[in-house]
Image (cartoon, rainbow, N blue to C red; front, side, top):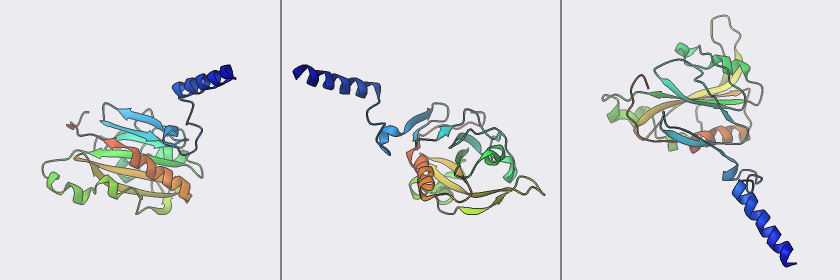
Length: 197
């Protein structure tokens, strides 16, 4: 009896050390996957089923894409809205897919006194208010893709961002909550921004 109890305790300790205990619990914080960037000074966690793009989806320098995450493999290619929308990824989306792309602006001395007026603190934007449904087209004559989408400006740590949020079709509450959680889990640190960085 004592050997069985010892073996059970050892098994639990080994599972915990391997990180396997707790990932089974749906929605637990341990089921979130950590992400970070030393280059762009942020860290965060992604819900299950979400992945980070290894490459920038759009090549713009201003605003500059610092992170794109979605529920599907995201191809590179921009267009629409002055080339800042990840149109290749949007076209790849299937019903039930989501994409969140974070783009950062250089905060100039002129912008700084009014930063939170133009870019409300991130904590005020977590509900993803202002999304709309329609067809997103990248060129005249393009029939477009039916998406629920929006641009959500926010600030954190003296930095200014837009979160470009896209759902193929109309999102479920669960998917909308997951996208909101992506934004909530991101933490941006102060940084000195240079155009080439």
